[in-house]
Image 1: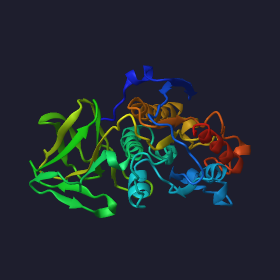
Image 2: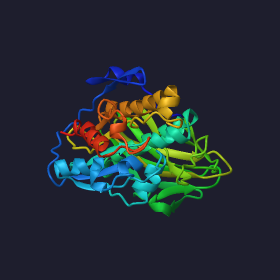
Image 3: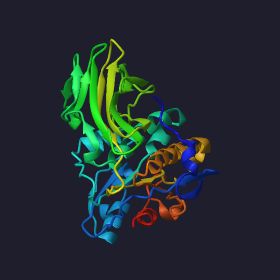
Image 4: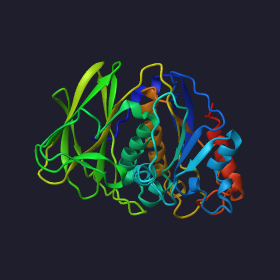
Length: 365
């Protein structure tokens, strides 16, 4: 299933107009149902690549996440990994590092700044896989733990070869034979989408169908097309499926393996909150600008840069349209990648990081 792009979201909610790479985009602003107070001590988790990590800085306290934490006295965990791509985020930054997921009504801030290495090293043919992992990470962070039904939750029923797989802290429910099935109950407080997080992997070649109350909605490939294989050697990640317009009430989401090879692995499903729950704030940035260099994607192939910008903004639009507390942060008006702002063609210096800090802080209440 391809990532969901919902053009109708561009007319929903209040919105901001953004420009980049000679294109204009209208992005809805999420309106959380309960205002969140981000007071000193609020947990703040930063995800991303070497820019978020603070590579090339003399002191990691000069990186933009540390500056945000210093300004607001947040409790920072910088989980970024140099060289990371979108598919590294679930595998190597969220699950492998044991990120916990508090329930609703817990103030929590996430920032996600990813895509530079995807566009620079993999190019325009890769942004489908980028979008798949990017959506999976955003949805996983934006939806509190009490709104997810995990593979290990009670009520899950398997038929065939279903086993709980616990490698790399995934805890997915896995099958490996044709016609094996998994059924997971879920209750929706009101009409809305159901989210599904399957595990994806290179060279798995499994396929499965997914259904609501016995009605098949679609088919998913465990190997998503072009290789996930990231610069850090990651070959598996978290995929994402969104089933819109499911009625309120209790439903059964079922999965049936349709291939005689490969596996079917389901990590969790989830539903949207009621109107009286506090949600985490997930701030999603676009890849920062780079100096003019031969291998800087936005300089050599502007259309490629535009493809990633459109993907990121479409991803944010999905979840803002679902009224999750997800917001797009455009850092380009703040950090322009001039010689005065960069340590090298890719990595900002302290001034550049200060400007990235300002971009994110404009979105924090």
